[in-house]
Length: 141
Image 1 (tube, rainbow, N blue to C red):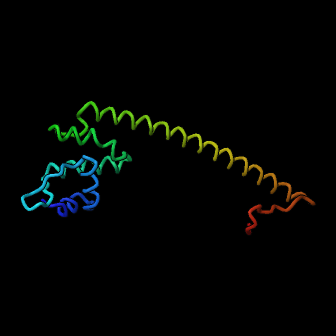
Image 2: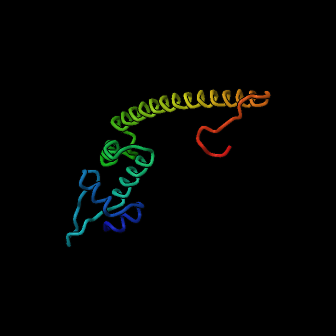
Image 3: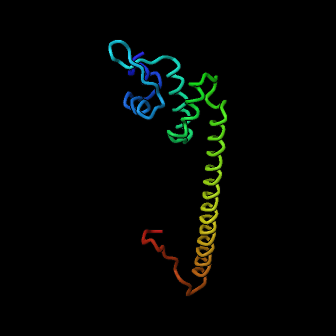
């Protein structure tokens, strides 16, 4: 199949395919007339790359999976190098989840503090002569 058909079947663009070719992820075969020529195995490589990228893997992280498929394995993640990439990516994700959990905890504490302060202001406003609550952002409350 030619590049346009492969791009359409893989749900990508010909420009992307040429980029993958330049990075050594997609084989560059030419037919007799000079056109790029692809087969079903190339479509399989592209689907592997696209799936991993959808999961957040960068292009270079897909290389061991592509090489595993090219070596004739039934799945791109059946080789030790692919498993190592999975392990590394899980470590990165765990670290990010830890950071996000810390940020979430900080925001939750800020919200709790703000709600307590607002409740205190409201309670003081009910006392004769107490302050009237005012929004600090300048909008209407």
